[in-house]
Image 1 (tube, each protein chain N blue to C red):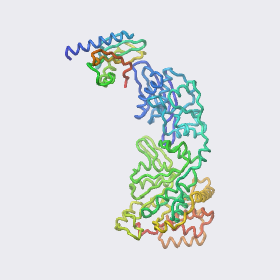
Image 2 (image 1 turned 120 degrees about the vertical axis):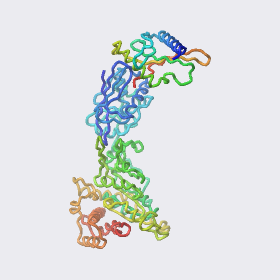
Image 3 (image 1 turned 180 degrees about the vertical axis):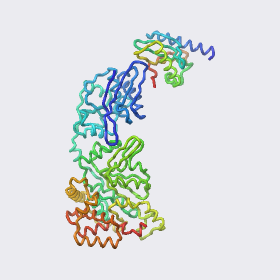
Amino acid sequence: MGKESYEIGQRGEDLAAEYLANHGYHILSRNFRSQQGEIDLIASDRDFMVFVEVKNYSFRSFGLPSAAIRREKRQSIIHAARTYLYRNRIKNKNCRFDVVAIYRRLDGSRVIELFQNAFFLT
Amino acid sequence: MLVKIASAAVLGLEAYQVEIEIDSSRGLPGQSIVGLPDAAVRESRDRVRAAIENSGFEFPPGYFTINLAPANTRKEGPLYDLPIALGMLLVSEQITAIELADTLVVGELSLDGGVRPVSGLLAICFSLAKSHRRILVPKENAAEAALIKGLEVIPVSSLKEAAEYLSGQTKIKPYQVDLEKLLSVPSEDLLDLIDVKGQGHVKRALEVAAAGGHNILLVGSPGSGKTMLARRLPTILPPLSLNEALEVTKIYSVVGLLAEKGSLVTRRPFRTPHHTTSDIGVIGGGRIPRPGEVSLAHFGVLFLDEFPEFDRRVLEVLRQPLEDGQVTISRAHSALTYPAKFMLVASMNPCPCGRLYDAKPGCSCSPTQVHNYWRKLSGPLLDRIDLQLEVSRLKVDELAALPQGESSKIVRQRVIAARQLQLDRFGGQQVFCNAHMAPQQIRKYCFLEPEAKQLLKAAIVHLNLSARAYDKILKVARTIADLVGVSTIETQHIAEAIQYRSLDKKGGEARV
């Protein structure tokens, strides 16, 4: 991954974290990695443990962002989430997978959208 | 947290209770369905989610394990959608149930939260009425479910309505039907024997067949009216009794064909499978076992047009149900029995070109072709057909000149009277009509006048009839005597019965 795209990704996550914080989320971890997976943001939202995937789009033309998370990516997030819960000995807590989509409109203005409960274990 | 809801599964024509257990635990969101679900059951997950959200409820967080007990039988179909959805609402405490004891729940959900009809409901109610008090059913199925007495049928049209009923917020009046009224509705037959001109001897043969439950084979040129006549056979059969109607309805319910028939099948079925039908299609079976044409024709008529055109295997599998009145389908995991008490009416041309009996333009088939055509019908199969007769084409002037015959109504009265005689005679013997008499019963009940005996002996010798044909003639003669209400078989009855063995007589001619 080139330095440039890494920075774009970082910037997207910063924006998402800020957005979530403004919406009452409490950010617990960023870029959490397990052996076979990774999660962009882990936060708590009231009673929920939330695992957040940040999707950065240069423009929006390929359907809804949540639908754009492919199976492999979902598996990766789920694996990392399991690892996180296990390592931190979190039990009996309801969890959720959210997606934050960041993209620009044609006129250049930035849009940040939050999709709660974007996917489930399958 | 754990919730249990009772539902049901259909196996053959019987049903058993399926307990749906839903356990919720906190953790990553998701759900799994266990207990041998098939694809339609596993997909219910997605329908349930959409239906819950679109009914104004919240899809609960956490992980759900849904178990369909007993876990060792395969669960099919979408009928568990509604109980699963209600269970999830209960387990997440969005509703409370004060009305769940002894209650069965079945129903398919649509994405908007509506409840869609399911198949096999009559079988479910029939089998589980004793052990349960109440059943929640899709509104479209209510009339069908209510045919069974002793079960409170609660029709629901949406998930929301069902949830409100369970939690006692709304009352729903149990659906009730008047069975007697349903059955007494005069079935308006568009067909009548009176429509067919001429062919008096065929009509008479059909009457005899109907009166004794005999199978019949019509051989005749194309356009001689075989199909037209066969279609009118149900109109002279006695009407279905209530128990018969329920059994037929059960079969149609399981196959999902009830919608087009109304809630109760009141007319005798008339099935005309095309000659390309497979043996499984005729006899029943398949990966998910399903009754075949012989069962769909239960208590009715199975009409096989172009008899020799059917696959040889199809014709041979017919033998067992013709004998036993039921079909047992054994598969790796289960054996099912479907009832199949039907009258077989077969029709065929005398030869491949169909003109063997016509003077002009005459038959163009070679003897070998005719031979091969007939060879498709095996002896054992023909043995199960008591009446065989030839139908010839009417000439134009005959068509115009012949008077109209009797109407179905009049013929039916004679048939009913004859059947009643048989019922009285066989009372309690597991036999209901002459066609099913065992050899012993034939000796006992087919009492011949001395002259009639003489005639029969002569016929056996001169026409070279087999011992089996002898029994058939006796059975048919018994029916003919019953039609006039005579207890001893007379010469004229035997004479008529011998006529109905035209293929035996032709032994050397058509059948080689």
